[in-house]
Image 1 (cartoon, rainbow, N blue to C red):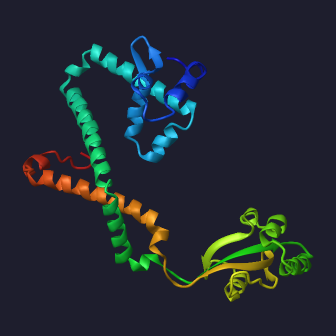
Image 2 (image 1 turned 90 degrees about the vertical axis):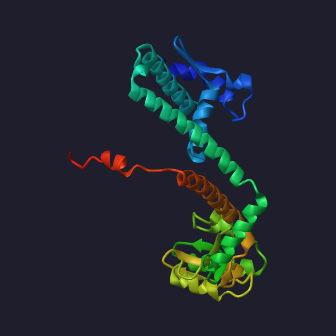
Image 3 (image 1 turned 60 degrees about the vertical axis):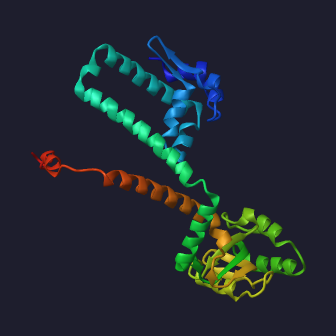
Length: 295
């Protein structure tokens, strides 16, 4: 079997170019990625493999030439072994025939359901209506307590409070808080963002910091230096959000995705139920297949 190193050197560049997009034209999709006297692996083969994977897994499968090469090799081995199975007459085995039939049915049913999923979530107005219905029916889910958004500058060291007061004087004189935070703050999580901590509610920060943050009233208000176990902070209020319901537009994208998922599941359930309504189970036959544990 060809080693991956050889595959990488000879085919990786062609492989990446061929698989750069999912919508390959016929000639590109038919491009051979790996050849063997008994079988060939084409770009379209890997596309077919990826099409049945969840989005995150499909993206990971295409993340590097090494990953693509490994998949091509695995597919080639499987294809050659399948050819050998046919040559050696394994397809004459009724059990193997049944397994092949089941695999074919699984692939076809998955393709049919994928098409159904696309149709179920294609109506933008239906998605919008469903998303708004979720928002209306679950008010507690979108209710948030009072929140504030602040920036801060964290100073550390024996002279932290002295330096904090010097910076506070500069800020009151009109200095740029964002620039000073980037230059002086010792908080690795927020310094690069100008000290921005985003929105937070009560109970999220250490008590001294929380008290100072919620005491600020108007955007732009500055706190006195505040000492916590992390050091000395200067806070500036950016925005205050009263307790209440998050506006629909702020959660619209999330709810649209939930709506799409719900509509897909609903459509699948309706199809399943319609099929099973006409099914007539043989209880005795089912029970006849039961194998007690340990038997």
